Amino acid sequence: MSVILTTTEDSTHVITLNRPDKRNALNDELIAALKDALREAAADETIRAIVIRGAGKDFCSGADLSALQKIASASFEENVEDARSLAELFELIRNVRVPVIAAVHGRALAGGCGLATACDLVIATNTARFGYPEVKIGFVPAMVAAILRRNLGEKKSFELLTQGFEYSAAEALALGLVNKLFDEETFDQNVAEYAAVYTNVSASAVAMTKSLIYDIDAHSFSDSIEKGVITNANARMTDDCQQGIARFLEK
Image 1 (cartoon, rainbow, N blue to C red):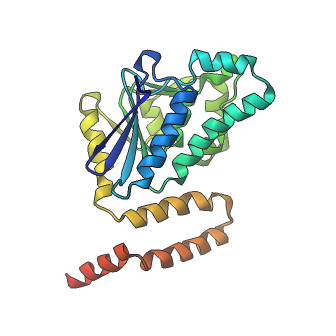
Image 2 (cartoon, rainbow, N blue to C red):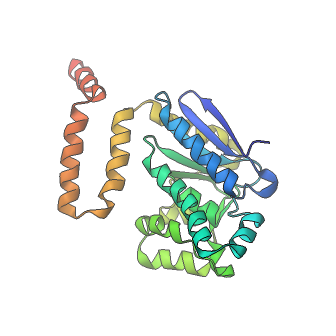
Image 3 (cartoon, rainbow, N blue to C red):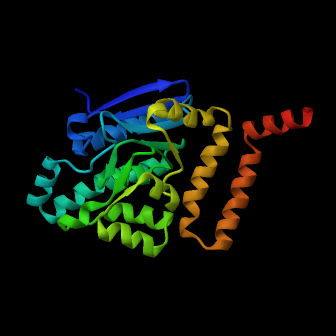
């Protein structure tokens, strides 16, 4: 059985974590398959959005038992290599040209919560649960800290990463870690409609906006404004912008 399933609906590519009996727990095979699927979708110019979701009752429960056993017996160098593989997945999500949307139902815990947080957008059912319980076993959700810290202030990031509690979808929405909540009964339709928004806007403008948002993280205000100037000028030269201006002026 494949650890992921992929389908394309109109211009939305859906990647489904397919280990429902393991609550879609992350292992080497699943992480590698996710990276391959993201690269393949990003290379398809007809794809306008990517959705990551989970099969069965949960989005993703984090590392599976075999992965934890591997960590416990690995050398420092082996653990660095293993951690870097997940870090590469988080970076890849930010580097692909199209929006990557996490569609969360059930639980998104530990590495699963990290995977959702790493996505550009997060939508969830009203009953979804989130959390970073790693601290309870002496583990550190270290790579996702770089993302969480950019989403939240220091104090809330510190609380979530060091207390290990689960929090509700409503709490995640209030924190800004989730964009939209939907009823569980209509979630499939809501996911499709949310992603389909990207069929009605400029693909080049979205790609350039995504790159700019993440690029300015490491720069001063003045440098960020200047990067905005260059991006704005580049956008004006695209076919999408030229055609959009023409349509607007014809009205």
